[in-house]
Length: 341
Ligand code: EPU
Image (cartoon, rainbow, N blue to C red; front, side):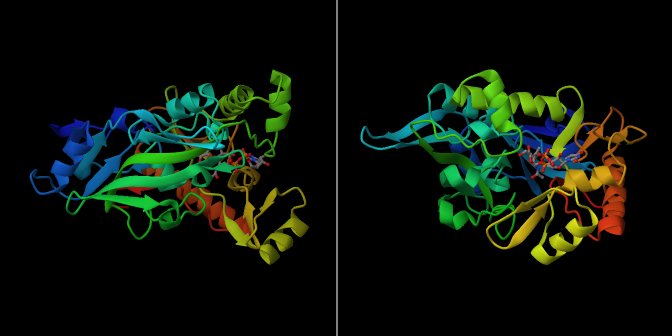
C-alpha cells in the first residue's frame, strides 16, 4: 500500500483537470483493501474510489482520500463442456476494453458491443455501462465487494444490484459503502450477435462476415469516428444521460419535432436522445474559453486544455437551461461532479 499527500490529479481524470487531492492511497490487492477498511489503517474521509477517472468532473481540490487500485487478473471460473455459457471474472482494476478484447479473442460473446468504452471493470456494474443496444447488466453474474465500514467481503448477485439505465445500487442506496473488487460475467460460447442499433449492422457488413471480431471492430470504428479520444482531448464520454419521459410527452414532442429520435422501452417510457436535443439548441461545436461541446457528438463536453472544472460545469448548466426552455425536458448529468458547487 502506498500513501501520497497533496497529489496532482491531472492524470487521474480524463478531463485532464489540474486539481489536487489531500491524500491518495494506492493498493494492488484485495488483502490490502481489506486491511485498509478493517481499522488497521488511518485515512481521512470523504473517500473517493477512482477507476480510471473517466466519468467524473472535479470542480475543486479534493479534501479527503482518493483510493486508486490495480486489482488485476482475468480468469475463467466455470466452463462445462455441455453448457452454452461460460463464467469468467475480472479484477476491478482491469481496463474495461482489455477485458472486452480478451473475451472476443476467446470467442465468448456478450461484451463486444461495449468495446472501447473508457474506464475499468470495477465501474461496469456501478454505472451499468451500455452502448449499441447492449447493457452490461445482462451479462453480470455477481459482483464481489469489500464493505468500507469494516473490510468484510460481500457478494452481490445480479438481482441484488438493482440495475437500471446507467444506474445500480452502488450509485444509489449503497453509494460509497462498498469497493467493487471483482466482477463475474456469464458469456455465451457461440457468437450471438446484437446488431440492431443504428448503423452497426452496416459497418459490420462493410468489414465482412458477421463475426465477433468484426462486431468489435465496427463498434471501435463508429466510436472513433464520433467520440473524442481522452488521451488527446479531455472529455468524459456522454456528459448527460438520455432523458426518459412518458410516452404521452414523447408523442407531444414528436408532433412538433418530427425528426426527433425516440427509443421506446418495455416499461411504457420513452428515451430521448440528449445529444439530439443539445444539437437542436445550437450547442454542437460551441466553445466558451477552453470548455466546449464536441463537434461530432453534442452529448460530449470537452476540455480544450485550460478549462477549469467549474467552467465545464457552468457550460453544462447553460446547456441544461436551453434544453429545458426549448423542449421542457430536464437533462440529468451522467458524469459525477466532485466538489461543492
Ligand atoms: N444525435 C444528434 N446530434 C448529436 C448527437 C446525437 O442528432 O450531436 C442523434 C443521433 O443522430 C442519433 C441519436 O441522437 O439519432 C442518438 O445518438 P447516438 O447513437 O450517438 O447515441 P447517444 O444516445 O447520443 C448513447 C450513450 C453512449 C453510447 C451510444 C451508442 C448515453 C448517455 N450515451 O449515446 O454512451 O456510446 O449511445 O450506444 O446513454 C457514454 O455513456 O459515455 C457513452 C458514450
